[in-house]
Amino acid sequence: MMGGQAVLAGVKVLDLSRVLAGPWCTQILADFGADVMKVEAPRVGDDTRSWGPPDLPREEGWDGAGESAYYLSCNRNKRSVAINLATKEGQALVRRLAAQADILVENFKVGGLKKYGLDYESLRAVNPRLVYCSITGFGQTGPYADRPGYDFVAQAMGGMMSITGEKDGPPIKPGVAMADVSTGMYATVSILMALRHAEKTGEGQLIDCSLLDTQISMLANQALSYLVGGKPPGRLGNAHPTVVPYRMFEAADGPIVVAVGNNGQYAAMCAVLGVPELASDPRFDTNAKRVINRAVLEPLLQGIIGRFAVADLMAAFPGKGVPAGPVNDIGQVFQDPFVEARGTVHRFERADGVAVPSVAYPAKLSATPARFDRPPPRLGEHTMSALADWLDVGDGELDGLKQAGIIADRD
Image (cartoon, rainbow, N blue to C red; front, side, top):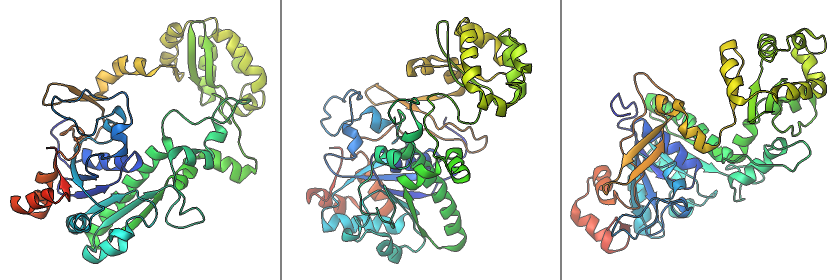
C-alpha cells in the first residue's frame, strides 16, 4: 500500500543488525515510515544475502553481494550503506550517524561494539535521547551472556522443541525461526515504548532483548502449565494439551485441522458429522471430560471424519461455526483467494523489470497503514545519498571516504 500517513516519518533508525531478529524489527519500523539506514560490511554485506538458493536473478553488470529469498524477507523499505567498521574512520562515521539517530538496533555479541566505541554508554554520551536496542542470544547479563546464540539453540534451550513433534518421536523445531521472529517483534514493541518515553522526556535507554528470554516467554500457556502444575508438558503431535478435539485428522483425501474450543462448537461438529449422540454422551459433554477421555473420543472422530472429503467438510463446518481448515502447503497458501483479497503479497519492480515479491505487514491500520516504498536494497545502494542526508556532507568528503576504503557504494 502506498499513501496513508507514515506515522514514523522523520524517525531515523541506524540498523547495525543482520540475519533475522534485528532486520525483522527494523523492517517493521521502515514499513511505517522510519528512515532505516542499514549499515553493512563492504563486499559481503548482511550474512543472509548469500543464504540461497533461491535468489533473485542478478542484474546485468552487477557482481556484488546477492539477494537471496531469505534476505528479501526482512529488508524492504531500508537504505543500504556500506561502511568498513574495522577502520577507525568507519567507526567515527557511525558515531556521527548515531548522533543523528533516534534509534539504534544491533545484534553483535555482548561487548562486541565496545571496542569500536559504539556501545550504549559511549553513544549515550553523544546522543542522550538515543533508544539503543541490543539483540543477543542470551542477554547482556546472566550466566550465558558470552555465548553465541542462534534461533535453533534458543528453541532447544527454551523448551519449544520439547513440546513440538509426535508423542513418541524426537524433539522438533518449527519450520520457521520463531525465536528470531518473535524477538524481532518484541524488540519493535519495546523500541516504540522507549521512543515514546524519549519524545516525552528527552531520555533514551538501553533495551536488552535476547532470543532465550523471548523463547521462554513464547511458551505462553505451556509455561504456566508447568509453573502451576509442576509437571513439564510433553509432545502431543498435533493435539492440544488441554482442549479436545483440537488436532489434525485424516479425511478421505487429505488432512484437516479441527479446532473445537467450546461445547457449542463440539455439538455443532457432531451434528455436521451425523453423530449428535456424541455431543450428549456423558463421557464427552464437557471439555474436561473430553480431555480425560481423549484416547476414546479421538479415534472415534478419526473413523468418522475419515469418511468425508476435505472439501465437503469445509463446505459444512464454517457455516455451522466449527473452526476448521485444510492443511495447505506454502504453494497452496499463496494460491488461496484470501491472499489476493487481503493484499498479502506486495510486488516491487526492479529497474530491469524483475519482480521482487514481499509478504506484506499483516495488520491493516485504517489511518496509518504500512507502506511499501522501496524493495530490499542492494549492498551499498544508498551509501552516498543516505550519508549526505543524515550528515549534510558534500561530495568531496564522501569521495575521500570512498577512495580510502572507508565506505563503498553500489559502483
